[in-house]
Length: 247
Length: 184
View (spheres, rainbow over the protein chains, first blue to last red):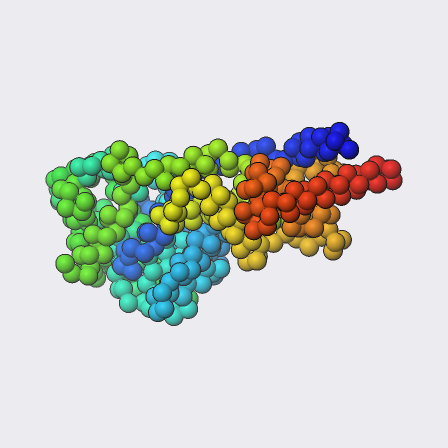
């Protein structure tokens, strides 16, 4: 009997899957995600966009939201996690199963930055960077610095990203203004109901991280170049970061 | 500070990633070490609950994420591994309840249970025929490499029950294998 059990032990061990597909970086990344989600009912945002719409040449059109690529299970779970421990009245009401890929930006690092959007039950929407649960933010830009930052606030590696959303229907472009007087434009991607909002993503080039060249304003423009909304608070975050005021 | 300014401030702070030595979190390091050393054991064991290696992988990722978030609630650092195992088992059962359950097999008495079946089809089949609770205990012993005492703690039974369960499982497996071999 003992021999039989020993043999069984060996056979059991041999049956285990030895492949190691572990990914600690993914655990850490997922850990940061809810923080980003909690950040900004107002923080959404970006410039050489390569979005879902860009590939189709549809920037000036409204993409049918429900026809966009559905989010994979981990993203759906991430959205679902938003309301897991939400106190009464604080739940976003996000509908995770309806999440879609709205934008994808190729970063200077070679990686892709994907903006997933999921509608909420109250007519708003959530992105990985925040929720506008009740459609209260006409222009909601945000700043993301996901890479390492030195103790003095110096950004050590890309990317630096503005991303966000708008409900201003005439908006077609985001203009990023810099301290040196230059500016760049990036198109918005509009999606249909149930989200019915415009989205943008812009990676700030390394040349514009330094004093004298940093972003100073994010401006929404219509197709004629008319200014519809302006935000100077979010871009100032870069300067504040280095001055240590955010530490 | 205005609400918008506060949001901006918070947004930027939360997007920063500071590396040690500025913040040294020993508990986080311990969780990371456990993950790196025992990932395969966790995944292989949870697979018997979730029904596939893919969903088991997701469950392990989620379990360690939860462990990281809840690490300050751990009172005894010496008990870290068992604490993470408890989270992992709960997460796997949750995954199973929420739709990551295995596909329904054609034989209702048989639960799908991922192992490298092609290496030993007879044993894989015999394992599938074990009652789920007994099979989990076998997996905790053989694939998680936990002691009887640790399994007893996790499953909230006595060590004697664990020993008896494993002995019964071994006997049942051996009997099934013998029967299958004779039939073959």
